[in-house]
Image (cartoon, rainbow, N blue to C red; front, side):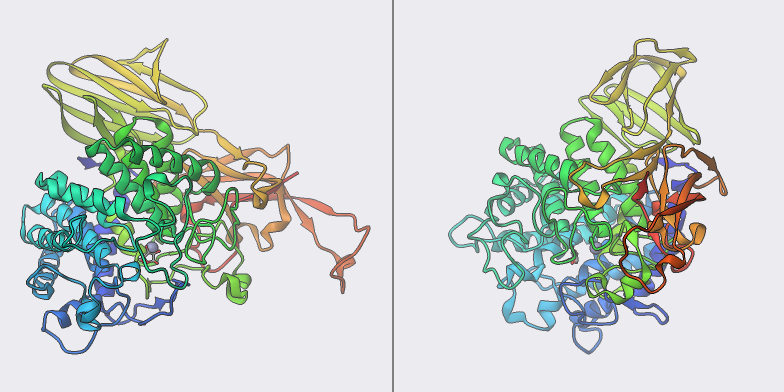
Length: 632
Ligand code: FUB
Ligand code: ZN
């Protein structure tokens, strides 16, 4: 698929030209990259990445010992996966050579039985597979598998695939229900969805079986629980199939659910799928931020309880939103229902994209909905909230996770199910597809302004019957669709998709116009943090106020019933800026020397307010930011 989209093509070029080269420099500890503490759960073991150095040492090509987390290897694997995906968009010999070098290193560092975890190899070999609640050994294997599937698919080079299979086989030989094997699974899920991908690529049933085993064995009798590695943190307070709500560490929960949905797709395990449905409902109706962020607390990087969505102390890790995108996409494989794509889009265009700065060299790990730099700096319970994006992290899971996700954007845009074609995200592209017996060329053009205009062209060399489904986005209140210029008077709608079924012949065009009004969204009244407030959304984008446009003390501004928005477009490649009339509370001399007082009459003066897309915040220096704004 060739992406040609004013918004996403820029991101793909950024990933190729800047993000991946920059991340390679970070993994190699090149000078001038500022490493930040961001994981509040554990002391930072290094102020370097040391990820490539660890592999070199394990391979016997350098001296020294392991530095960094016990899952530092995955930063290299996720980077490799990103390279694999980006090569589908642009050939790049230089990146490919770097990737091949990294794969050679992985081969040299791997033990003869396929085991690879540079932390355990170099620091505590006697503890291999003995600290499963902590060790991330299978998590690392999962990321190597995902890298292998992507890199092999893009290049046809199979060395990394052979290495990933060898590592997966090592896990398979050591773990399983059989008497002679160890019984248990990894504290951090990830290998499960990866094994399903490996099964899909190789057709080897053993990988699917292993994924199922690792999902079923998790539970109260599975781990030796220690310190904050509680049963909830590890999603082990009940068997995954019996769980009702999203608990514990948010990234782990998302990767587990993705693994469950992907596994159930092939095994037909109804209980597993039912659990996915229950937990999906719990997350999306009670525990998800409007930005698609998840994880209401930094303590354990975790979910808390229903409607607990604080805007300033939350976690909303970039990886957790990425995990939600994966889970939503996996659910779309089961059910073509627009509610999954709506959430996928929300998480992608807001929390996930906010994880990366415009320059592609700075990243957020934690994504607040309200940022007050003085509090971030001085309040001990907000140390995890940063006012600007650091270059890199001691625990650097998020930056390469963004690289692999954005570089594979096409995987989230469309799908084919039951012989029908589905459009989930509106992004410009061109591709050749086979639908049943027919081979078609599809082209989609997008214009997003006051509304979203979609022009979808089908080129059929021979007349061909085909069904196309177009998602009706949750943010759109009305739409109009035409086929070859003729309006559809009774459009057929199924599960939130507009269905167009016909015989296509020659070049035919579907045009759809979705209105994209500026929405003032309220939260459920039980969300205490958002009471009396609204968030602004237009199309897939949630908006925010920034100090750079609106001055400080953003909590003093409010919208009114008379507020009207106008749109301006400083840069045609980006979504519009929204300007409106609101009010600002004046804080005058009557408050001099007082902290509390009775009988003060609040005085509001008119204020012009400027909202920018949330994903773009913190690109103009340090300043306040606010998503949920008071409304009179
Ligand atoms: O533990 C591996 C990764 O590091 C997790 O997914 C992130 O939350 C961070 O803790
Ligand atoms: Zn992360």
